Length: 200
Image (cartoon, rainbow, N blue to C red):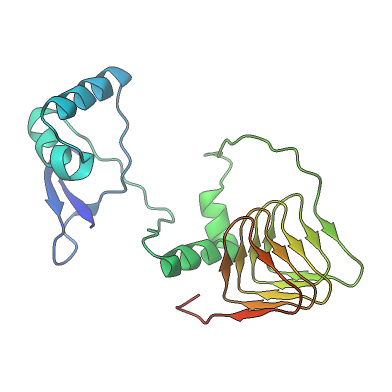
């Protein structure tokens, strides 16, 4: 359920609107910046009053007791609420303008370095318009796809328009199109899995 804020001229949140029939104000992105002390106080207050949802139980009341200010973000935003929306959001990363917006040097994303070896592309393999993490072994064809760390694509395999999570193994001669494979999945030689746009 989408939440919207009504915002005053000074960027102060004046109202919280939940589940409107149409957009009303600015959309809440489920991100708050607050001090540790305030967070602990709010958690304690929620626990003593049996309030379990920040968004549903606490947020509608907070703007009456605290000064809440909105920060406008006008870059790339997406919500993943289904497999199809996860797929569409992920595939948007193949567009250079989306990657530039998300991964700009002024807002670096910090994460743990896994120190994986570089990906290996066998002679005769093909990789086009794809994001390939470290540690992959590609012996087949990969097009318009996202490969997480440690993915193996066998000889003669074709992977198109797909998302293969960490440690996936695609056997020799397999064909994948519009597929999302969870981490550690193993697809045996010669198998075919085909989804379609809008229903991976």
